[in-house]
Amino acid sequence: MTLPTRVPPGAPAHADALAELVEEALRGLADGRADRGGPAPQGPPGRLAAALLGDLGEPLPEEPQGPGALYELTRRYAAGAADPADPHCAAHLHCPPLAVAVAADLAASALNQSLDSWDQAPAATVLEPQVVRALAGLVGFNPAAAGGVVTTGGTESNLTGLMLARDTALRERFGVDAARAGVAAAPARPRILCGAAAHFSVQRSAALLGLGEDAVLAVPVDEGHRMRPEALRAALDAVAAAGEFTAAVVATAGTTDLGGIDPLPAVADLAAEYGAWLHVDAAYGGGALFSDRLAGLLTGLDRADSVALDLHKLGWQPVAAGVFLTRDAALFEPLARKVAYLNPADDEEAGYPSLLGRSLRTTRRADVFKIAVTLRALGRRGLGALVDGCHELAAHAARRIAAEARLELAAPPVLTSVVFRYRTGAGDAADDRANAALRRRLLAQGRAVVGRTEFGGRIWLKLTLLNPDATPADVDALVDQVAAAGAAEEAGAAAPEGEAG
Ligand SMILES: *Cc1c(COP(=O)(O)O)cnc(C)c1O
Image (cartoon, rainbow, N blue to C red; front, side, top):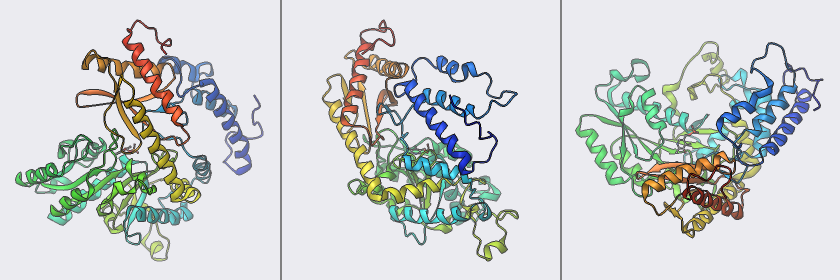
């Protein structure tokens, strides 16, 4: 192993110091991937714990170990990774990042701009609003009026949207400044309505915002996990009848399991009729906007007050690349802060803007940079082709599953996820056991990473196909592995792990 001994481990990341180290990191990635030899490390979790640091000793040694630490740890880290670039790693909304985005992220790390003040990030402070305007236009907002910010993901975007919704509702209805006085100052309880298949971060946001998780009412959904408009109306009426009010309706454009898209035009009509803020969680489905073929699925998105997008899903960015948008930049008002050492008023008057008032965070990494590079490098058409490719893979997987006697498809795929289960023929309880066990069997063998979920009282398996390099043959092989692992489970828990087809 050649160590880049010329580079002191404590040196700032100037280009020449960086080049050698980047080569070491790339070598570690390649060697670690070869050590792994599949989508995930083999063996039980305990084995990985031993392998990761194993012979290296403690994470914080007393004496410096030098820059060789980079190769050593990168190799072990890659060997123990679940690799979204492997076509058989298909459990979650966990994408293989584009090389161009990873390289751009390296530049972002090296420059280490922080978006809480102009004097820590002049170019990034200009770039982020430009990217926000472009994405606002894609959503259908008026780019000149819209506002937005890059977030850590759908969770932070949903929290931000619901915070703005809470504060706007309490101010407009009761003249209460919730950000200062707290929600207890409101004379009636604010409610949040969302589909029963909405993301759990809606409940968590309600808790963080002082509304309580119980403030969230789950509206019944149809078999595709889409909110039923007549059920939403009934829920809105019930809230009003109880002397409470609906601060926000959260629609989902792309549920995590089935990719279900709530009927946005009907939901928008109802939110408007009842005076509720409409937040659309398009963390998954927003990527469809890049595709001419699929963009129509999101008709009505432009009627939202706020929208969450996640470009670390259908956008192929390294984590994190969430985007939170509002139809009107003025809706960010509850987040505005004047901090003497960050954004003094006379600086702003002199033309030095700050994005401090866009985010719940203070120090904020320029995640916008990799997004800007990607949008320019691929264009909408390039990203749309990747979305279409993954959508076609999902359609292929669904056909393949439907043709397999022992597999049952839950629903036709909407976006890029396919939900199905193995049927043993011995009843639901046996099916549940087999599906849970076959997924762990594949994981322990390091052969395939398949998702699992539960609804309708049953355990289901899930392929979330986000790898545009995967081929239909890769998908066939993955489905074959699932079917074989199911057969091995059925043949009896007697079959030792590591032996099944
Ligand atoms: C992924 C996802 C989230 C959570 O987003 P993070 O980026 O993981 O914080 C929220 N809602 C939906 C619909 C999602 O798919």
